[in-house]
Length: 304
Image 1 (tube, rainbow, N blue to C red):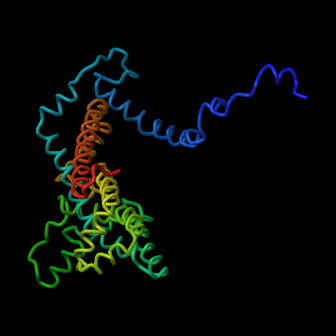
Image 2: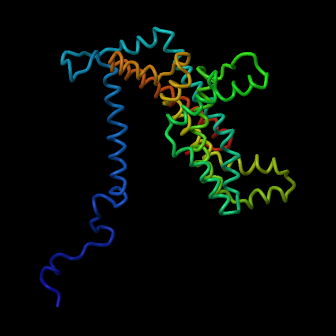
Image 3: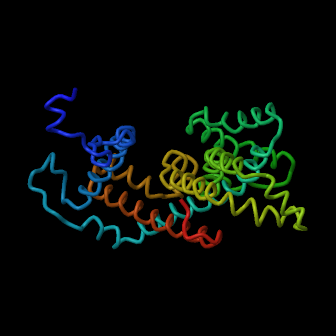
């Protein structure tokens, strides 16, 4: 027999049953979102706020809003040169990392031997197990005036004086490419490995050459990996400090080096924050333009 309570309060239809307020997916994304807010949004917000204040509000309560830090950047050609040098080094490093990393990633993704794939993967990852400072010092011993290259060439009688391989952008880019090529390779390997080889074989069966099949099948399908790897390397290259400082010396001036100088020497957090905001804004413009170029090249409306 049905109870009186069941009679007075009939069951709700299935479409009107109460659902949990927060889905399990939201709970799973919560920790990642919290980390993103704490370690990216909050620090960037503090940096952007300091760039618009006359001083540090923690030490001086009489601060006021100002744009003088940005006016200082716009009024000195030195900072334009540093910004352009930063972007130039980042773009060249990304280009050569892609030029070197794509064939290696393609080779790894198409390798049939598990042992060979494992050995090649270890060879790519092994440099990452060594600190950036150690690898940069290794390049210093190779490229400096009395390094391995100049000493060998002088002993063979091929040069009369040392070649300028260090304390310039050339040495900086060489070291950065060596450091960041593994990031490009690891990003591209997973994308190329998911491309069905039978698509390229079908193109060749239809009369396309090996090069044309690669250019019209494999390369367009690997554009998301190219975009991801390029953005990763570009972001790491333009934010590098140790390698440009050691390899470039005083002849190479980048925005990360200026930011470090403003924080450590002048303790001008406002101007350092303005430099950081400008670098991020310009980098976002470059990234969006690069995304549109790849999207147009692939015939898609956008890449993710």
